[in-house]
Length: 298
Image (tube, rainbow, N blue to C red; front, side):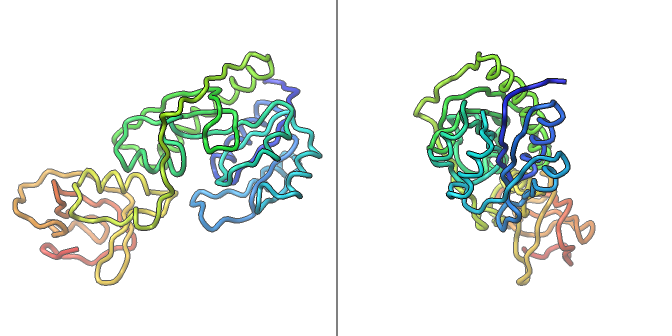
């Protein structure tokens, strides 16, 4: 077991945050405080870390505005050497960043400086990427812009859905954070400045999850993978009802001249084949079940 004298406060409110908190405690790191949220209306993978902190007898506090005076005062009272921020959507102001003696560590699942910003796992899957990054960095007031402490590449397979990729990134990050903290404690951290020619991804909207059957089967399948659980699912409307697809595959058929959205085969209320703008999609899991017949149009 690792033994560390570093006093750490962890900030987070998603499942990844929970995994990191448990991992650090299991490796005997000194977590002197946890900041989390009691509820969230927009985090699909939201997790209240309060019960976890209670289980480990760690002081914790709930925030609405992470930069508020009351949160700042609470952080100061913990006298942290490090803050580890893993899974909150608010930017930290300098009044918070200067509190720890050493600095504030952030995490972003991309190959920084590329793909800063929101929803990197979703966008990477939706755009058909074959790899993603796992990056720890020292935070400043700009989003995902501080010098890099550790960066690893996580491969994306064609059968990875959102949950699978989240798991891969989490497992990679677990090994990284131990090395990062050991290097910091040994005073040998490697800092790699970020270049300025990166890019940022925007926050997704509900419209981004809408299936247009004129898209290629590959594009629709990538969208399904990207928005599968724990996210809300790629969706389409049929007879004024909304349906969410959780799993799909590309299928070869002998159908020609079939308009996009035409139902070519029906196996059950949750499995059917539909023509797309290019190739065909076999829907393997749709919610709720849908009553279709061959020849119908979505």
